[in-house]
Amino acid sequence: MRHRPTLAKLLVVLMVLQAHPLWADGLIRDGVGTISTGRGGTNMGYADNGAIILDNPAAMVNIDSKGLYEASVDTVITDLHYTDADPNNVHGAIRPLPLPELAYIVRSDDEDFAAGIGVFAPAGFGSDYQMNVPALGIPSERYMSIGALGKILPALSYRVTDKLSVGGTFGLALSYAQLNGPLTVQNGPFAGAPTLLDTQGTGVAPVGSLALQYLWTDDTTLGLCYTSESKFTLRGDATAEIFTPAPVFSTFNSKVNLVWPSSVAFGVKHDLCPHRRISADVIWYDWSQAFNELNMQFSSPSNLGLPPVIQNSLPLDWRDSVSLRLGYEFELDDLSIWRVGYVYHASPVPNSTLNPYLDGVLEHAFSIGYSRRYHGVLLNAAYQYSFGPDRHVGTSAIIGGDFDNSTFTAQAHWASLGITVPF
Image 1 (cartoon, rainbow, N blue to C red):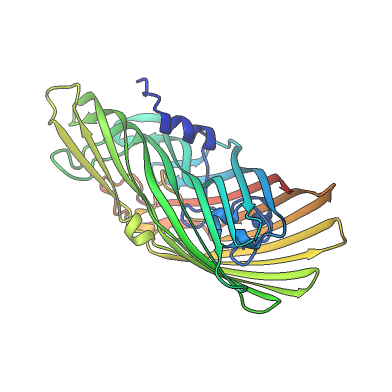
Image 2 (image 1 turned 45 degrees about the horizontal axis):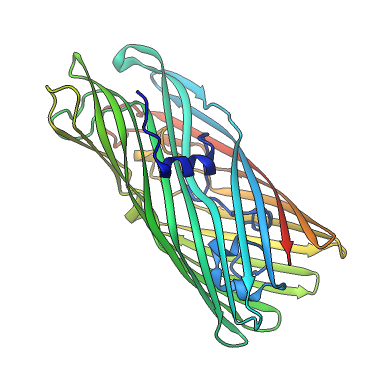
């Protein structure tokens, strides 16, 4: 069916280009922007790039210039592999996905205040497979999902003392999600019925953060930031063919409740000398509250033989996660800056609810970055490789047996190019 183009959907499409991403810490990216990504996503103790608006807005008053512009494009290429006993042994479709980052920061003349605005795409999920569905007698059916989180963040920062600065953001979060493929109804009068489902929705929610940065010594800077959850009701359209056992087809209005988690981040940057720096960030994500289950509601069916409202809740039972990010940066000369980094986080996804629609299985990431000064402008590049162990499902907690005895393997390659313009 034709989906209605809402303003929120169009904005999210501009940020994620409707492709099929794979993400990292759960579904959160291991670093946003070229500079941060190159040093393992560490950014809490820094004040040298536009992504501090997202990571630690208190750092804006500590930039070295009057202000800065920044733009970058991060492109991800994924490699997904799924097997089960049906039998399926398939690789996900590979489609490069460009993700933008835009930022602008300016300080007051007395350097006690700073303001900024940024556009970021920090999280999402996605997959795209062609698989056999024996329960429906279908030799090849598409299993596809897209989920994206974008943020438009105005930010303010204030220097409280020579050592302490505080800051925060308050803006709009935009989200889009689509699920297209076979899925067994989990509860209600149709529980256990196989279904071919295509549902999509968009939503807008307020989002904000509170942060501080503290210059502990001349060489050591500490950062702390709390980021609120983004709680959406995604409204859109759905089509469904429910096998009861005879197929029953209908269109619906749909609502999907999707929550992106809150987080608390702490980090430190230490200058070993004027040309070499090390950094470490620790970030806690509240997945257990955000991804306990995925609630879907379908109303106003075109088939009048169906109930006016059908509920379906997909169990997730994700655990909270802690991400450790490590970075090292050194200036080779007055023109060149090199960066390396490493990220570790245990996957928040239990084996019992792992499925091909939601990933979140990457655990490690290695990165390298480079910046070149050219007439006062920084030209930035970074590469990040993410991977995790093979994951195995015995008996799935998702009713229907669709994902029993399955294995999921994933890796991702990130390439980032950007420009930072101080003024």
